[in-house]
Length: 61
Image (cartoon, rainbow, N blue to C red; front, side, top):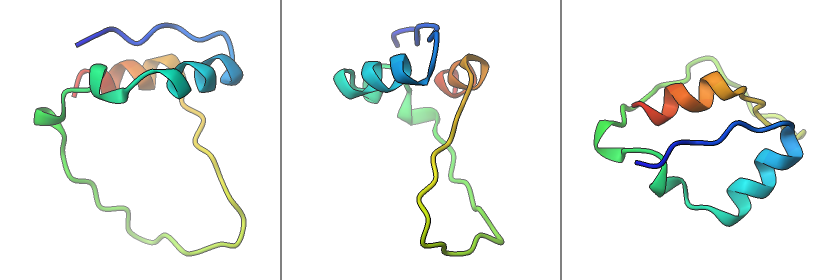
């Protein structure tokens, strides 16, 4: 697996993932199913802002 680089900001991260495949950075054989209970629908879009520690944690799954 390739190591996820450190990003200076959200734009840099967005540009990186627009041109790279997550399959090169995450080992799907170690993926786990997650249930997200208590969520409700909304008409607004949202985005998740992860920091580099969270990227690295996901990369080690």
